[in-house]
Length: 120
Image 1 (cartoon, one colour):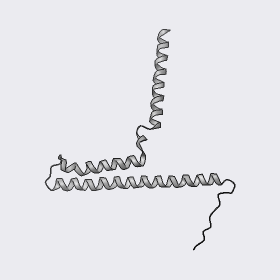
Image 2 (spheres, helix red, strand yellow; image 1 turned 45 degrees about the vertical axis):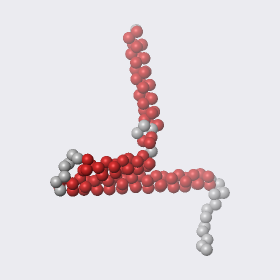
Image 3 (spheres, rainbow, N blue to C red; image 1 turned 90 degrees about the vertical axis):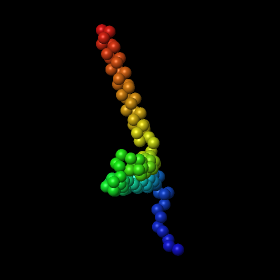
Image 4 (cartoon, one colour; image 1 turned 180 degrees about the horizontal axis):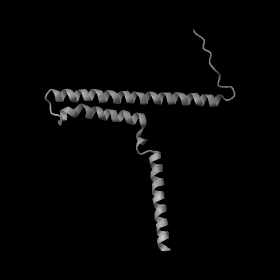
């Protein structure tokens, strides 16, 4: 059996090193998922363009369900892959909420300033 030289986490500053290493591993896993999604997206575009060109060049109608059935159903799977990588909060997440709150607060502030200026 092979012996491994493992670093002890009982040294001073070991918690910080542990959390930094843990954060690195999570970031690496996230990048791997994002890369997998981009490969999925690239293959989706290339294969579906090839299928559509093949159908149309062999006399099929461009605007028919058969032409776009594969991109449609594969696109649904691609959407779920996107949501699994980026999360449901990608579009309407915390940053969006914060921007909207700031926007409405600014609008309210302008309305109050306009009302005050009109009263003078």
